[in-house]
Length: 192
Image (cartoon, rainbow, N blue to C red; front, side):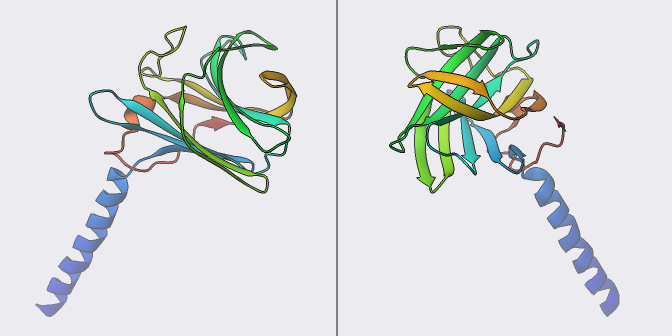
């Protein structure tokens, strides 16, 4: 009798742990250079919060997170982070109408919640509506590819040279499903 009570208790603990892990989901991506995660804060207006880290973000460089289904690097909406030679972090939003062309918006259509640089380690959190925003009424309500771009050199403020290194594509991200209520989950559908 005593053994069955202990067994039942142990099974209950295991089941509770399993269900707790299933219920906790935050969508994210990480490689050796960049880590990013995102979630939607539910409310009257659904706000998408994006946390972005670059582990080797030196002066006079840029890095980006872009959204869209291409083809290739065409027709992407982007959030671009740049670091000047005075360690100032500037955030832009932009559009790529064609390969090797970036049209930077007059104002950034994201809000910077916090930003820090420690050595060459950038940590920044931005928010934006999940729905339509900006001059192109860009929305992340539907599933779309997210492209993580390691970055390149700045030409000048708001002007960017071609990116260095490969990009990572996180296929078919459904940001609307990444809610604070759901919790944590690591995406595994990336392409190298």
